[in-house]
Length: 148
Image (cartoon, rainbow, N blue to C red):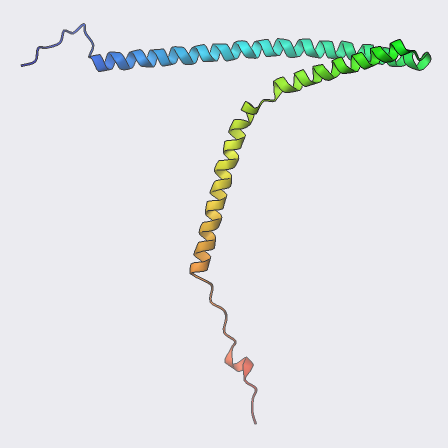
């Protein structure tokens, strides 16, 4: 005869399940916190890059005006340097906003619905080929000419 369990001890299955649910929740919460922190850092980085870009654009315009008034190799070199810095900022801004991971869900949506469309198309084609529409027979009165 089994011994009765004390009321203070929860069943082992229930306790293990509750523990794993709590651990899962804590892991998901930590993931959300890390994602939020990364988003905040990215937001600050984008703001800084936008400010730097505006500053560089202003400086580039000033150098272009000076270059039109009095062309010099130093101004041309500075203009080239400013342009390369602007290009680097643009690449940094775009690469942070676009990632291959962001294409994961649209890719699977295309696969899912494209595959579904192919399956539906094949089903319709098979159904039509198995039951072709009857060809209309020419009417007898239209093909016979009255003989007198």
